[in-house]
Amino acid sequence: FKISSKRSDHNFELDSRELNQTLGGAVFEAIPNVQVQMKSPDINLQVEIREEAAYLSYETIRGAGGLPVGTSGKGMLM
Image (cartoon, rainbow, N blue to C red; front, side, top):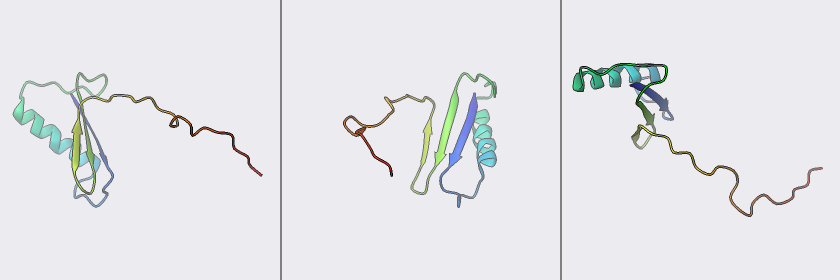
């Protein structure tokens, strides 16, 4: 496993590295035989710290991307 964290709230008491270490320690306590893999991990636990909440996920689902339909009209620049 691997833990990747981002902080939108930079007033949070831990920086990203400290947060990764703290959460990794908690995972080790809960699952003692788990293996850490920084390259090609089986599970990448993603943590995002915002002002209002912390969000955890283990999977990224890609959206369609691009501009919404009908918004890519012609433009003019002077």
